[in-house]
Amino acid sequence: MDREAIEHARALKRTLQAAIDSGEITSKEHLLSRAAGHGLIVTRNGKDYAGFRCESGKRLRVHFNFGDHPSRKPKEPKPRKPPLGGTWIYALTAHSSDGSRKACYVGQSVNPRQRFKDHLACRRAGYSSSALAEWAAAENAEIRATVLSWVAGDQRIRTRFEGYWIRLAIMAGFETPDVHRWGNLPSTDNPVGQPDTWPTHQIVAASIPLALAAKEKLSIRPLFSNREAPPAEAARQLDLNLECD
Image: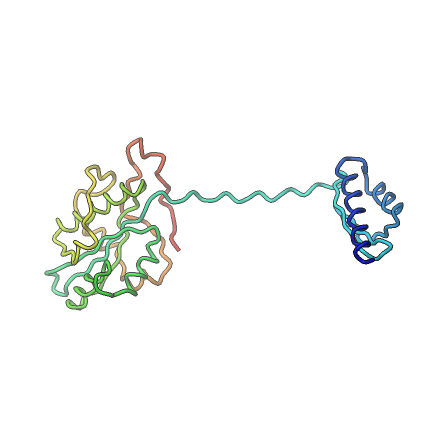
């Protein structure tokens, strides 16, 4: 019996909803009158829906928009930011206390702060900057982080710009511990927007301790960018006014 009552309520719902959707029922008054003819009692009387109770006690609901109130506008999806078609190139540097020696690690990441956390937390032998950490510990030197450049383009372009910065560091007299593990990269022949030599003063002014870079929210303003790229790469260029949380 209960199953029969459920099916009856479903059939009434389909009948009323179809009549509304097809334009056969054109007003709320018309709907209520039709429902009463089926022995339905009104339980809900909303702006765009009505609820009814059958004689069996089963309930049903129908939806409508008869033009007597503004229809609800569907929420427009928020536009997604386009994926960042590039990477941040950064440097970790350390200087001996007497200033006679200096060492450097250059890397790239789409999330520098997380990468700085990784560098700070992982010290296992052979891991990217672990050799630099050992060098700094032996010299009792602080490791500092600097965001060098924003490089837009595909992975091949990004890797060549990273290789270019590694070359600048070596030419500037930096030791690059275990560079054969992490820095054996090709270098771009067209370093658009990059300096010709290692920009010592700018890097020193912009650098912060690695421990701080790994903890704080950083407002990233890279020192350089290849945003003035050749026409073939122009479509890939991005606004540099970005923040990395």
